[in-house]
Length: 632
Image (cartoon, helix red, strand yellow):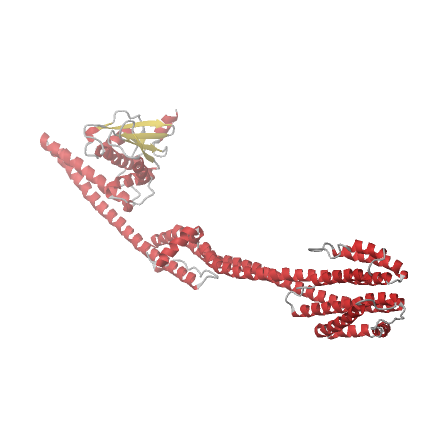
């Protein structure tokens, strides 16, 4: 077996649909479609990852903005707490209101991962209310704000350059705002106390340096619009007043007393912090918008790839259906045409040939059929080949019809010649019998007469097979059924073995006597041939309503059920005698004769052994007086 044949057999075993054209087209298209779907699935998985990352980035940006809102409130609470601890009792009411705003921002943030940096917030507030350490309180708020900022600003860009710059600018501005808020809170306590204590000035200097560094970093990452917004916030009247007060604090680095109204400082710095927070919110809005764009783009790409996969499946299915239909429809049309050729057109062509009496070109040329619409070149070639087959079949049918016609005509001619000679021979034998007085010679003439009678029946059989419709012999009047049976017995070789005792009276029309006698002779001779020489063949006759029935019964070897069915098919007269072996010609003769008489002939098993041939004669074959007698 070749490798290709082995692959085909393997595919046929694995895919039952491979046996059909539709199944093969589906399999052929399914393989590349599946590969393409795999690639599309990989792309969808990749886009799904990008989509999930974009949504995560957007959620992170939202959380960063929420954290910044909390940080902004904590920065103000830190400053008010530091001022209260510095001795500014007027901040009491403002601090209580600010704590409520801080708690609201904390609730909006939700649960914090890991250790909560604000876990000690309630305790610290109690310490502030009790007049605790200003330095420790300031450090708690500062550390908590730093922890919140650091834990919620890392890796929020998601790999996008524009979003990364926005998040860097947001982080830098947050650091700058925290520096300003730290400066506001620390100096608020200094101004309330009137001088720097311990390391407060060093912390003040570090905060100023951090603010400058953060603003430089912001200028590097921010867009021109974002830098302009910051410049505008730093150019307000409160921002300039805060800068002047900051210089006065810097002049007291030696520990000298600083005379600055804490309320003025707090108000100016609060406006500056709020303006910086406003710029921070604008940068955060830009970052969130960019994250939303990335999420929308990832969603669109994911939807596009999913739609592409669906489109691939739909297109592949449509191609499979259209390709299969483009093949199966023309093939179906050709199959219908082939069935029509085999079942109708070929028979009609044969009938035209027979009616044309010679097979003219018009009769043998099959009707033209147009090409199958929408078919491929190969289908068109197949249609042309089918028409060539039809044309060849019609030609062969014409030859066969001519051969059969010639055969029938030859048989008829030969039968008529033999019949004419035998008629003359029987006439001569009859003359010799009338002149012969020697008993022994007369017996030999009788044997010769019987032999000639059998030969005449064979000649008439040729005429029957050839299609001669009218018998050559006819009786002028009705003949009894017994006489018809005796005439048939006289035409068989072993006539002495035939018993004709039980035959009810009936008269047969004269024009049917020859055919009925011939039919019975064929059946009786078959019964004699296929039964033992010691066993008789019995003939019975009886009336059955308007019909008259005859039965030829033998006790011979019998027949199998299949052979019996085929024999009855031959007796029905529907088959041509040219397609069967010559030993069955008697069946075809009986079938033709039965068709002439309108009789029904059927073989049935005899009880015990043997075969019984039943002959049912219609009322039209019976003589008028017999029919009247049967009804009385």
